[in-house]
Length: 125
Image (spheres, rainbow, N blue to C red):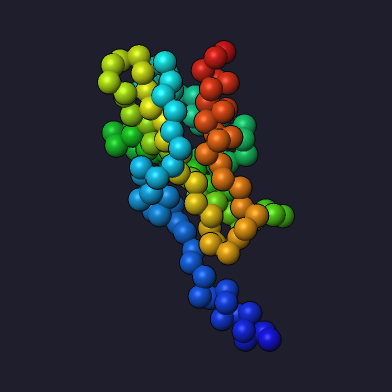
């Protein structure tokens, strides 16, 4: 029984921050009536407030990486947030790709909506 369980765990897929970043175009997105720099500036605080750890960014390429480690209900999640100017100077599109660290983790939350909602809240202040 132990060997069967071990084989199951070892054969399941795992995701990394690189996988979340490669998922660009697959996550939900919103367009905000705010300039790129303003939207970019609120994201680290939004991440902290929803309980995700900021990992790094590449402003030139327009992405921010975040992670949540192992918790009571999850083996962790990897998140990539893509920020781009949407046509004109006062519109910014944000896409959030949230991946479970282990594909068998059915309890891992999808962080896209909580992050987008928190960005909404921050931009309204």
